[in-house]
Length: 196
Length: 196
DNA sequence: TTTGAAAAGTGACTTAGGTCACTCTTAGCT
DNA sequence: AGCTAAGAGTGACCTAAGTCACTTTTCAAA
Image (cartoon, rainbow over the protein chains, first blue to last red):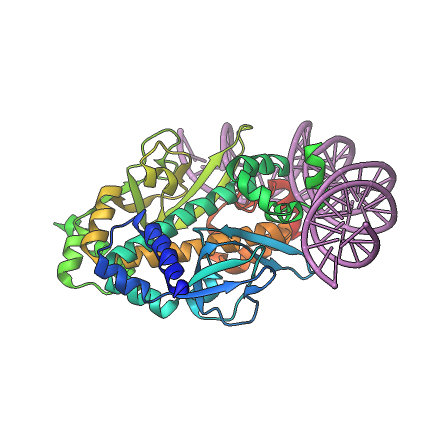
């Protein structure tokens, strides 16, 4: 009984997330929410692995994950940190329904709502507001990535760090510095010399 | 007379571009196309400038442009090359209707269809297929940028160059190497030492 | 067809940041 | 409380790539 109560709470958060951008009628929402699945994982568990099917796109109810790839030398490169209210997936593999190309694992115990490609297309073509929601979200994501590319092209490692400190101070608190280094494209040691 | 004939040809190209991803009825297309404006520019002319309003998103009928920003030292950093069949804008400024943050200018004489934010939202909310078109396009764009970020994080300048040579051989033909260098985040001189 | 400007190549030197090896600190576990 | 492992700091050295200054090549406009 209690379980379902909490689940409704979580779904309400998701609805609010949609309604920050588009409006949905109660009927539309009822339809939309029925296409999500719930999942929860502990710290260190994998959401997505290289070579494994990528069945879902995930909206994070609670928690923190990192999306990264591992190069030939075994070095980890972080593509994205994602926390509450973020979407995360291996978008490329998901979109083309191919085996995963990156890893996504939990830095904290986390909870997700999962959306399959089939269901995403279903709700997008059934409920135009949802198509617009994802269009606008995706656009924002694009803009963010462009910013990041510019920062990689134009800034020194140190100023990229300062920039991140300003932009996402809360993130820095929750994530070990060696992962921040990997996100910025700097070695752990070099990052460590910046503060001092 | 002739003018309008050619214009219909160009609009047909645009329709085909939409219909690679979604289907449109003739009526829908008639509605959609009426929201685009035509524009043509000569080599070296600006489509977007820093500080100027960004009234449109542009679909390139013909030609080639570069989108770039200029850093404090006056150095140019290329965010994107865009040619036939590509969309280009200062997405960030456009989306928020703020003054431009980058430059976009023509490397060749070019022709565009221009879509204002107001018109884009209009056709997206009026014709769901269009919302889905932009959603899917934007998603592809996102995936491309992620790839580029990964390449900046994981690859040496030289392998980024080889990678680009494979991925867009036609582009290399049309663009001076110093601009390729600026796109890759490498100095002109360093790039020039790779071939040899 | 000349000619001036942009593009491309190259040598010499500098530098940001990487790598390696080691130490110190903190945070979970049992 | 005590112990292991992950995180973080630091010194010494190395290297990929940047910078500067100059030459050579290409190309478009008069």
